[in-house]
Image 1 (cartoon, rainbow, N blue to C red):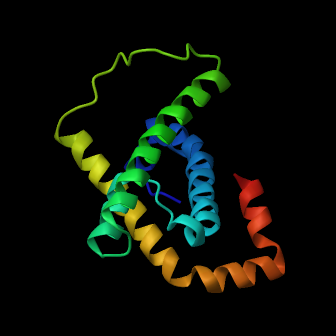
Image 2 (image 1 turned 60 degrees about the vertical axis):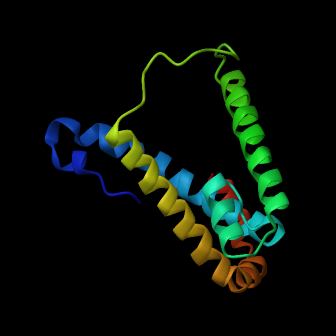
Length: 145
């Protein structure tokens, strides 16, 4: 569960607590997806992840490029699906400018967290998969999402 500075401020305490179920669901979904797709594709969810695998010599350049194209296409498709799910116009322009040092730092932190999660999960996925399949935990973890 993410620790938020806002939880310390009484005026924002309830708003911060309201986000905790979303944080837990996001973490559970990420764990489930990495566990399921890690053995198949290496859990390539981000071009930086693919770049790290390419730099480590685990995948050839052509495959890395194909993964990156698939990631961009998947991101666009996911956005369109989310708009349809929430009855928003499928194609729309963002109205809020998201730029600056804080945004870049937030992206760096999120990408570092994703890389750390994938690289550490890959090291132990076979143990988790074996134990989770025996107890049915992976099914319940996915249903939590």
